[in-house]
Amino acid sequence: MTRIAYVNGKYLPHDQAAVHIDDRGYQFGDGIYEVVTVINGKLADQEWHLDRMEYSLGQLGIAMPMTRAALKIVINTIIRMNKITHGLVYFQITRGVMPRDHAFNLLLKPQLVMTAKPLKRLESPEINPVKVITVPDQRWQRRDIKTIQLLPNCLAKTKAAEAGAYEALMVDGDGMITEGSSSNAWIVTHDGELITRPTSYDILSGITRRAIIALAEKRNLKIVERAFTVDEAKKAAEVFVTSATSIVTPVCMVDDQKIGNGDAGPVATALRQSYFSNINETAAE
Ligand code: PDD
Image (cartoon, rainbow, N blue to C red; front, side):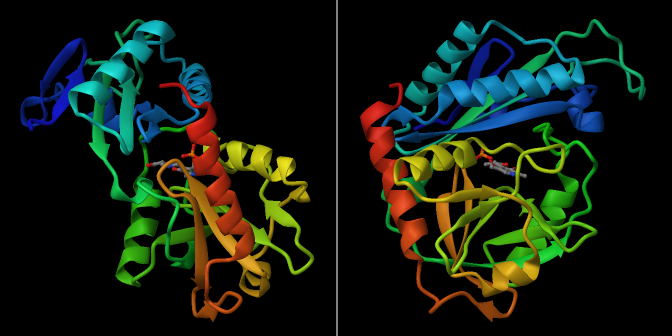
């Protein structure tokens, strides 16, 4: 089957899909993106992802490339053309094309690219716990905007891969964990409290984080939104990360420290199960 990508109004074979070399996304990382998962043929938390997309665009003064309704049609078309049942849709919107200059023209036409691919990991809630490492957070001060400018995240994730780990948790100047290179970070204390950093300019306001808070509240779990230290994570009953592609992924090791008995924790496992069941019950087709 030929993989199909969407580029500014055209559906093209993936290997022929291309953007202009003067695209500001290519030149400056001047753009934003979203990743929406498809589980069992259903789009997970689509409206929340589109809300965040509009927020990111608004913060950078980039216009919507089309109406939200039209964008949903492109999303559904790309899923259908690529026959995705369990997978992800990636889309990015850049400010537009102009001769390279740091200062941008305010009237550029935003450029939209969309791709989709299957993801085995989303086929079932079963998962093995993963290792994470900690690294200094080297990013800019507006991490709430989902920009495509991801170099510090890429360096952190590559360091994790080199250490045989799944994710790198990034640590701020005060020794507090901000978030993962492409996920939000959580701990469960020995008293059963769920702790995750509050949303601010310091972290991306994860859509999965938001969904998991809602599911945890339904289960009457105590949620405390506060920053936590690396040491707290290493001593926690459970550690896990959340993202569109990880859903809830339990962590068995932080740097050289084993978490609990090294198995997937019960809270992370239950929340992961709930997320999958909830998608099957409620998500848009
Ligand atoms: N990453 N924090 C960062 C820095 C992220 O890049 C992501 C998502 C998250 C979790 O957000 P959400 O739950 O909305 O996926 C938190 C996506 C999956 C990516 O870059 O591929």
